[in-house]
Image 1 (tube, rainbow, N blue to C red):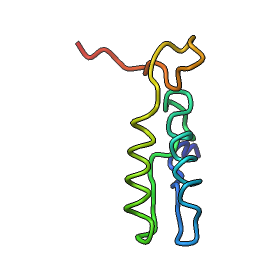
Image 2 (cartoon, rainbow, N blue to C red):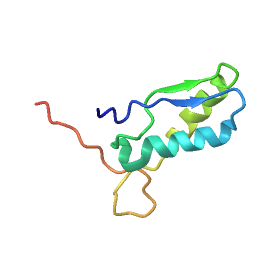
Image 3 (cartoon, helix red, strand yellow):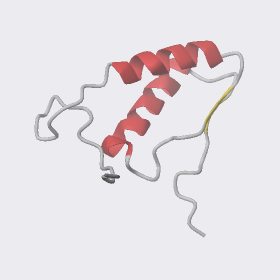
Image 4 (cartoon, rainbow, N blue to C red):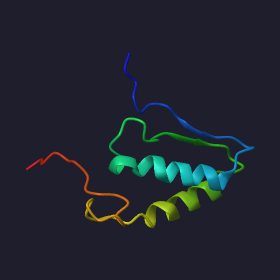
Length: 84
């Protein structure tokens, strides 16, 4: 059974939150977020929720979008279906 991408990203109460955030940002943005192993469901212990959420938003906001041929680009264009 193919369940790609349905694995939860779990951060427990004894986690290194900075490492978890860094891993979540990298994992979510890998291959422009279009890979089955990109974390989509994140389950965060309430002890770390606010810091994780804040740092995750900040980390994602600082991803450099642009030309995938430019080495400084961290996330290229996203595939989408033209609905028009």
